[in-house]
Length: 146
Image 1: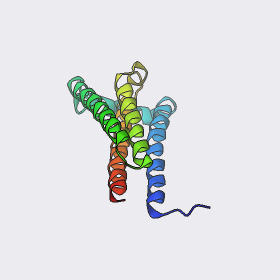
Image 2: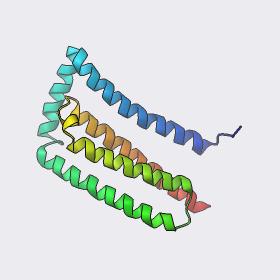
Image 3: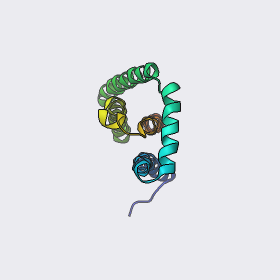
Image 4: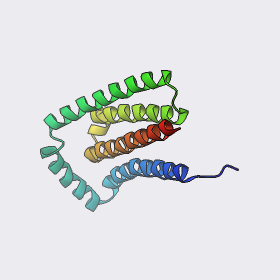
């Protein structure tokens, strides 16, 4: 049986937190159809978000940033495939690319845009992506020390 070291436990905890954030957002969307109080709150917040950080202009900027992040991640993956770094780091880069694409899809998808919790989906996927970028950076630093 493998011995779990501290970094392995932390990575599993982070992965659980990332999954929980995404699942919680889908649960929130489900509850908007079942509970009037939740629907009222999400509807009110949707109005606030649309006049603030998720205005159409800001959404365009965020979409451009997500495309840039996809490109940077792809370039880094191509670069590090030739370098001698840990397989764990390469997998983390692939996960970062997948999450970047998922964030871009959430922002551009009519399916998510039609949901009342659309802005929560964007925030959830952006937060998960941010956490993943941090995991990738820390996993590179860890593989760099070896």
